[in-house]
Every structure is written in structure tokens, then in C-alpha cells.
Length: 497
Image (cartoon, rainbow, N blue to C red):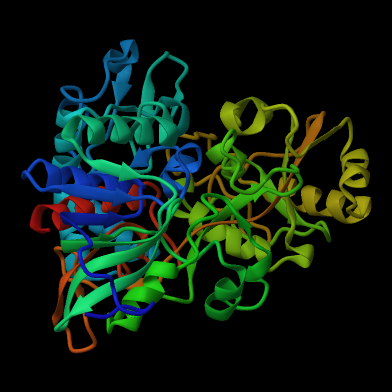
């Protein structure tokens, strides 16, 4: 019997299943094992008041395949707006195509098939246990002139209360199922006997602890919170990215799994990264503001760097399909900072929960020249950028935020949709930098979460789910598919463990 930290003591505590990591995937795996009558211990690195992994910091949006509103109303929370709401069907085929499109075909097809087919059944199952879901009106639909709503971008359902509500529900359900949740337990090594994982070594408030288990499920996140690992695998400059979520995802259990022969999975050179408030003092791992430090109304304005130049197509697609790759583009800019620019006409369209909080990085001025001076950008350069942009807009097409309207600006770079002139004061600037969410490289598994070695064989007793599971994402990511994958593959792992 061995592990990465010496021999395990005899007479250790024995359980059926140990889950390492207390985010959405970990709790889903724990629930799936517990409903089968397994004795489950869940180890969470964070203290009870700092728990929940990255899931706590999310908006709770979860991408599922469905056939329209009639396929959702029987399990999402009631809302008086449902009667005037259109939710376009989102098929498994569309879901798979979106994953292939944004990852440039580098998504694992077998993992993808399971994700898209089991996403809705898994959420229905979680709902039956006590998790609550709703239609995300404030994030995924705009009210039309007639008072109706049209959802867009394939992402329609989210947790009541966002990520905080998600983790509250998971924790309550775990208690009801008798799951033993232990906080401030930082797992550090796997115990192996005759090639089979038989337990875990963890630091605990009372010292080092070893647990023997029939199965160990790893759901401890990626390595995004370790600046040295970010630089090593993602490249120079990534050590400067801001950590959006938990500071606890430092790759310890990825290293532990690799040490005993697990194969790498997924794309270790890319990650999920977004436009993130650049100058708010507490802009890392902020449990009060959580996801509200993102700046995701950028498709309606323009983004300029500190030279006053645009450098990407803000309207290339719905936000759901571009936001997770544009943080990287901000990181490349001088000082790793850029500014989202809007005028008075556009300002009411910005997400309230992200742009209307006190203390955020916002500058307002009556003229573009005054705005440029406030953000340290050359006024002439910014004015020229805005003038060229305004003059190139195809104004024959109506602006419509609910569809890819084709209203383009034929400047460089082009803006493909939602091109609206920046011309009416006051003008607004929001400083953004790169906020890293999670890394795409992790551990390789089969479609049931069974960890594979270099020869493609299952390492007996070891499973993986959540952000530690590599293979679904590369370069980019369709919004809401991370929580969905955590649910689907967490449930699968827990069903076998």
C-alpha cells in the first residue's frame, strides 16, 4: 500500500466512496452514490464559509438540450412571464454542433454525446432531489416592445439564486441524504494497493488523515489558481490573470492522479477566461460580488485597448459563444487592459447585475475626449476609432439584440452584429482585464468518469468529473456547458462508484 506521501497507517477509517472537491460536480457525484445506499464522505479543501469551489462563483447557468418551453415548465420555477415567452428548442444536435464549433472540433465526441443527451435528464433528476431551476430572463432574453420575451443563444435555464443558490441546494440535499461533508480537508495523495486506488490522504484541522474507500471520485478543479502552473502550461503573461473563482484550485489532485499513472486529458494550453473588472480592489475570488465582476454586455458596444484601438469583433456571435475566449484577447493587449465603450443610448441595455453596482470600474464623461482623458487614452485616437466605426455601420438593418441581426460595421476589425453608433453623450467606459475561470487540461477518463492510464485502461477505484475531467473543451466554450458537464459526469461517476 503506497501513496505520494509515504505509507498509509493501518486501521484507517473506511467508507464506500470518497469524493474530493465540494463544487457542483462533487456534490452531484456524492448524491448519485448516496441514493444507491453508499456511505459517502465528501472532502472540501475550503472552510465551510469559503466552500463551494468555482460553482459558488457562477451565475448558475446550465446548458441543456430541450424541445422548447413546454419541455421546461413542469420543472422550472413558475414565473408570470412564461405565458409571453418564446424559448426556441435547442436540440442535442445543435448542442453538439455548438461544442464542435467553438472548440474547433477538438472536443471529445464520445464525451460530447453523453453530455448533450443526458443534460436535461440529469437536471430533472437533481430537481427531483431538491435543486431549484428557473428561466434566466435577466441574462438570456430581452423584453420586446410588445412585452414578450425571446430567449437566445441556446442557454436558457439556471439555478435559483445563481451559484450561491446552487451550492445552498446541494449542501441541503447532501444533509438530507446523509452525506458526510468535511470542510478544511485538503487532499494531497492517493493510496494505491496492487494497482487499485483504495483511499485518500488529506490534511485536516486535526492533522493528516487517511481514508480507505472502495472508490475515490476526483472533482477538485483545475490548476487555474496557481500562477506558476498557469505560466508553465498557458504561456507567458498568464500569471497576471485574475482568478475569478476559488483560490483553492491549484492542481494538487491532478498532480496526484498523474503521479500514479493517470493519463492527461484535454487541452492543457487553453482555458476559460473572460472580460473581468480591471480596477476594483477586490477583483479576485470575491464571494460577495462573485460572477457580477464579469462585463458581458460587450456585444452592444466597442472594446478598445489603451491605444484607443479596437482589436476584436465584439458582435461575432451571441455572448455565450465568445465570452470565454475574449479574456485571452484582453491579456494580449498593452498592460493586459482594455475598455468597453458605450453611449447613453446603449447604457440602459447593459446587465444591471454587472454594470450598476457601486464601486466598480466605471468612467463617465460628457464627451468622448473627456472620457479618453479619464481612462488615459489619446483623445484623438479614440475619437478616430469611434468615428470610423460609426461611419461604417450598415444602418439599413434594424438593431435587434434577440437575434444575430447582421447589422455590421465594415471597419477593421469588422463588427458582425449589433453595430450601434457611439454618438450620444454621456459616454461610458468600463476597464476590463483577463479573468480566468478554469483550465481545460485535466485527467483522461471514459464516458463514465473512470480514470484511464496511458494504455487506455481503467485505474481501478478512481473516477473523475467536473473541471478535472479533460476532453470536452479547447480554446473556447459554450456558456453553461461546464455546470452541465459537472452534473452529467458527476452523476455518472457516482452511479458506478
